[in-house]
Length: 171
Image 1 (tube, rainbow, N blue to C red):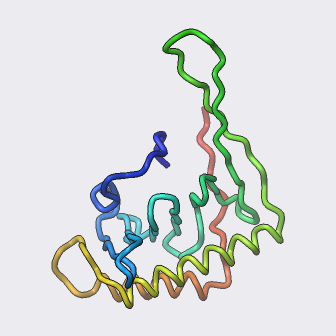
Image 2: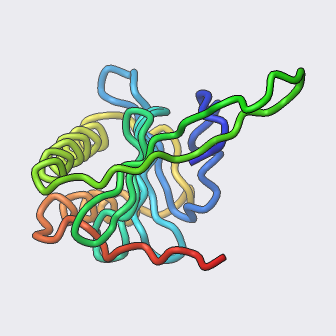
């Protein structure tokens, strides 16, 4: 996620890595969601400014951002990462140091998180089906919306929730 956690002006415009995407609002005209695919055919779901899910091509969860916490698949569990900022110096103009505090979720925590993800995706799917598509990219073609609906349903019906562990970069 972005280093600056302040609200974004325009989610649709910021999601340039998603070559195919739609923006919709809920039937009551309130909450915006951006859903789309990148070049690897990974599904991305952004709902408002505080929720993001990223699924691999097999529709398994890789990463999430929920309620200010980052989540990353570890294959059999999720690592929950919380940003911790600390000023190490009282000098004017000094920047805070940011670290990530990690907690691996228990199997029951993963089950609860999966329920949350599924509830959020069902809401996004409902918003897409009953709401208003405000923008789409590409602007032409009718195949994107059914493809997004199919992908969301694939995630909801998949027996495997988590993608394989993300390979860490070597320093």
